Amino acid sequence: MEIIHLSAECYPVAKAGGLGDVVGALPKYQCLAGHHAKVVMPMYRTRFLYEHEWDVDFKGHGRMGGRHFEYTVIREKTNVLGFDLYLVDINGLLDREKIYGYDDDTERFLAFQLAVADWMNHWEHRPEVVHCHDHHTALFPFLLQHCYAFRQLAGIPTVLTIHNAQYQGIMSWDKISYFPGWDQWKWGLLDWNKHINPLASGVRCANRVTTVSDSYLQELRYSANGLENLFEYEKGKCVGILNGIDTEVWDAMTDPNLVKPYQLREVAEGKQANKEALCEQFGIRDPENPLFVFIGRLVGEKAADILPDAIMSMLYTHTGKLSVLVLGSGEPHVEWQLEAMNERFTGVYHAVIGYHEKLAHQLYAGADFLLMPSRVEPCGLNQMYAMRYGTIPLVRSTGGLQDTVTDIGDPEGFGIRFQHATVGDLYHAMERALNLYSDKEQMEWIRKFMMQIDHSWESTVDEYMRVYQSIQ
Ligand code: ADP
Ligand code: GLC
Image (cartoon, rainbow, N blue to C red; front, side):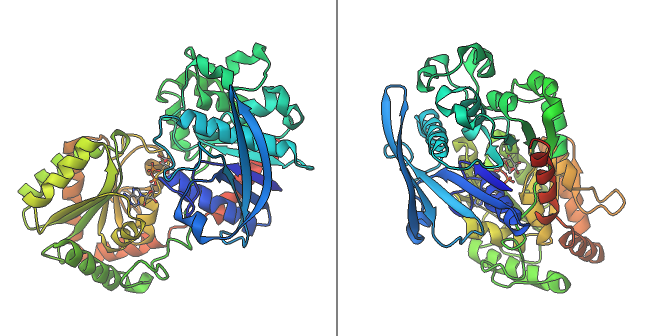
């Protein structure tokens, strides 16, 4: 089967979060399973672009409202990622260093989708499925089905995966001039609450919709940033498929970022060596103490705002009993609070504000506990990476966290779960972790148990294939 993934991110080409990880891994494992998966994404000016060799595959042009644009599609020469990778260049729109965060993001991602549709119009064959990811590519099903210019592509089956329904790409109706001639009877397929809503349009127009965990799909029917009724109405075409992780990239034995790689039977010593290196790097005094880490976007969804108070309370009431490291970036006031604590808690706490892939790997490996108090977590990859490195996750019971972590109070439980994204609940969970840490035998059992849990993509690829097959 030929599967075309359309995405704004793909690791290691360009990644802002879990979407990049998923689009960098799922196609690779689809190819290993004998399918022909390809990724098509914007050509940002990232390092990957300059470090690899490319063939020009196609040159074309398009129109977005009054704006004429030329586009070029290039293909990576050596199949280095395990699948065909195509980048679409549009000068003046996609030729930027960052993935998101520009005033004209609406125009950038719409032009990207128009260019891809135009390029496909020139293909001599039709792919079996186009798989769109999140709102940046969610208008594609509408474009294919209802814009006259792409009429010959209308029959191509489409799937939309929702990684995060908080972001919907909403634009005002004056942007409708950007769309090439379309069947205006179908305006209802673009509209949600008097705006053009790409994510809502994708849910309506794609043949099938998937979410990245089953619990998240259920949650969307009562909490979806305004789209609740839509998910209730369209539930027949939706299915939750839990993300996998790339077990080649995330392997404590072969991870080049670690000071000491380790395998299952030496997890205690391996983690201790990595912890000691972190302690030295960040001036943490006692490497015998349990090390708690947080890695992620410092935003409301991740409940990063409760971190400063919860961590501070723990450091005051359990002085000298724990250490904490934080890595993240996001809302300035949270960044500021976390960074301001560096001076106050030197020797037991340190926050690094920024995005550092290598440090993230080192933290998963060297930590004892990972904090994930998320308010919204469609799947969450951090907890799965942590588990694979023998690090115990402390998670709020929501979305994918609920589907991947069981509490130590339950049979065969290995994590710590709590109900509310509040300082009190997180504090209590951290106290439970402190208690657990003093039981060396149980720690050892849990670490080994977690490292053997199978979250590999191999077992998930078939679920996507069943979705694709259902629409052929
Ligand atoms: P989300 O996509 O919502 O941010 P996920 O848990 O799905 O959350 O994935 C987050 C990914 O981004 C993980 O690979 C995590 O290690 C990585 N990540 C997040 N913040 C940082 C950071 N500041 N530095 C390095 N890696 C980060
Ligand atoms: C989104 C979600 C996250 C999920 C990731 C990959 O960024 O916030 O929970 O793991 O996508 O699907």
